[in-house]
Length: 394
Image 1 (cartoon, rainbow, N blue to C red):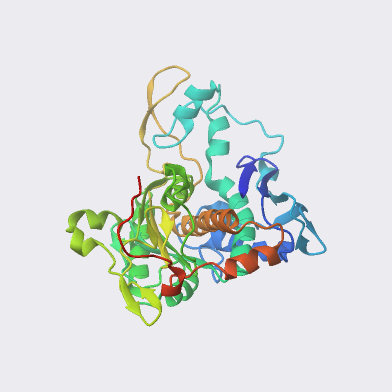
Image 2 (image 1 turned 120 degrees about the horizontal axis):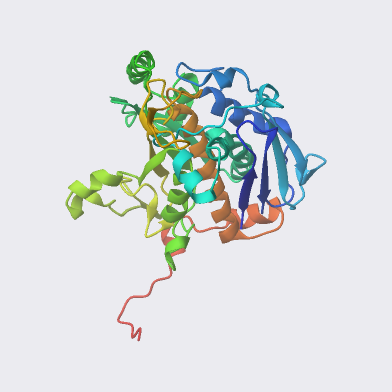
């Protein structure tokens, strides 16, 4: 129902995004997209940059220009076209650049050259670069605004960088969101943030990079989004695919994820209880999704990001122009991009949830969608129409 495509290279003139399927009538201006772009650059709306970020973050001042799909400050229902300029392009325009012939392990260099037959590895890295996610974040901010209009909120925070971990489980989810915005590493636990910063400092001194884990939570999601009819309609399939599409993401889990594999079945499920007319769940091991369908609890999804492949310390490689053994050459990069990836993860979750809402509710205007959304079942006893007794299904 909602489709996003992007175009553009890391050091080209600009990045472009086209978002199709947003209903008419959603108030939208370019300044609405700016906060998420700032958060993607600095890791927090209150920070201009964090230690470990690429020097390029001091060059770019990302803001989106709305090219189509909005008139008089409201969406028209037509595709929305956005552009984010690359200010760094000026340094590269008209400049002769030596061909890149030494592939970096873990990057797109070698695989892309084999697939597309490039004679310069830089061609592949330009599109594979995480710079492309700026266009995604701009477009996904539109989806966030759409979800906001329906009372659905999406936030994120970092729970691990390298070996330094934080456990914010004792904090209410809304407080985790707030604290993350106040943290230079998007970590809601100050002590955990200090440990993470120390890890980054050690990696920087060693010329190395670090990965980590971030968590995205969606609040206010009604039960019944997604489906079990086919594998690709399941919400965990759709969210997983969206998060795996972020560069360097190597693992995704929902709720307690891999930890559930070590528990017996009676301890791994979320009991079903009644409180008045409501069906309630005292735990959320499932992360808000059962059998590919949202169950009304917060959606909790975690993504593991590997360390950035570009390191100051050289790595073993081969010069493809002659076949000789050599070592990699350093290209400007982050030492740790986990806080920035968390914001991209938020955006991708917003995109998938907005798509699922439109699939469930339909509608051409925001008012039409909102009226249908507000009437969705919320899991009270009155929502069920079950009759006891044997049934002859076949």
